[in-house]
Image 1: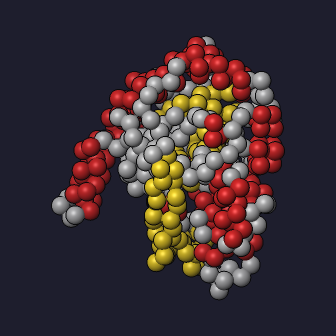
Image 2: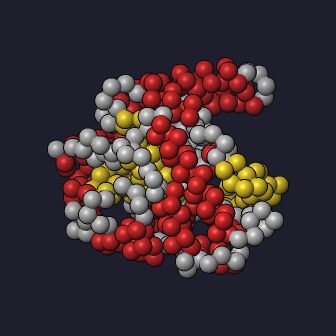
Length: 371
């Protein structure tokens, strides 16, 4: 078993919010409790969910993203130069019963992008203080790509950035400052969450980008370049992974397709230590693209779905790990859920007990596969 991240048994980050926390968030929004009272309730909920991650046998723990409404926008809006726009982002998600629509405020780049302060610094410091010995605190943030993917060039004020290259340079510099900032707080495990790389495998998603004026056929190459720029001076001792999925909102998804379109450039060039990959059903494609993963990099197979409560069969998981090992050595593989359990505050359609049963299954399966 590995003693450094990514771990043989791992998870993506977000966890279902407990009812008491959801009630407190509602009370705070209605002005019934103060920000300090809400934070105290969040603290208690995080202490409990960290304990449950430890009890499940996980060697790392997150705060479940309990202080966030959204896995990405809570971070992006705290970058200097980025504000909420009046228009709305609408994303159509799919599930077995039909389609649902996710709507949130759009973003607008209205001044030079910068990092005024390390984002989530206080949140990570609290997590680090409660994980206990032998458990690695893990911080998740959206990748630089997510700042661009939602709006593209149209979201960038041309009076601020007549040259898009300067926007990218400033954005990567801000992320480099964030990476250095969290490392200075003692973070040794950072994850860049990214839907763009997986979305770009879907021809329908590429058509949407092309229609708004972006270079959909080469967009992933720009994103790889800018993530690498952000990580160029990554501090010693900090492991950085990326998680790529096709959307996760109330047990629904937004895109389909294997990793084939981006695989060669992504796996061979992206300067991260590991890849969390969604592989819970047929819409994620096969394992053949893993042949491009170079030695020394890890693939965390997201074989356990977070979109429904039914528990996977352990033998089926082992069989699929064996299939993946035909394309990348078993020693470079790990196991996790395919996504978070609650990428937004609403959460997916399963219970808390089902969530932790899946995490325990991952730990048990990994122990039997890797020892």
